[in-house]
Length: 129
Image 1 (cartoon, helix red, strand yellow):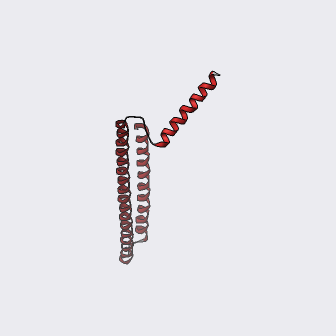
Image 2 (spheres, rainbow, N blue to C red):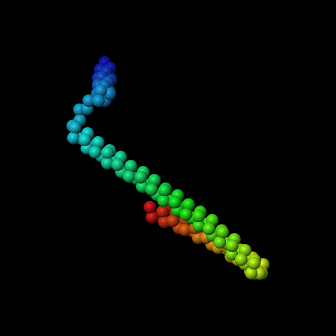
Image 3 (tube, rainbow, N blue to C red):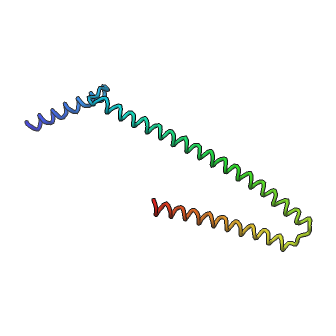
C-alpha cells in the first residue's frame, strides 16, 4: 500500500513538472534565467566570430593557392623559354639533362622538407598539447 502511494505521488510530481515545463512558466528566479541567456548570447557571438574567422582563413588560403598556381604557370613558361633559348644557343644535351636532373632533385628536397616539417608539427602537437 505504501509503495503504491509513493509511486502515485512520484507520477503526480512528474506530471506537474512536465506540465510546468511545457506551459513555459518557470518557478526559478528571473535573474538566473537572465544570466543563462546572457551566457548563451555571448557563446553564440563567440561561435559567430569563430565562424567568421574560419571563413576568412579559408578565403585567404584560397587566394594563396590561386597565387601559387599563377606563379607555377609563369615559371613553367619561363622554364620552357630557357630550354628553347638553350637549344637555340647550342647547349649540349648533357647540360640539359643536368638541369632536368637538378629539377628532379629540387622536387625531392621540397617534398622531403614538407614531409619533415609536417612530422615535426605533428610531434609538437602530440607531445606539447
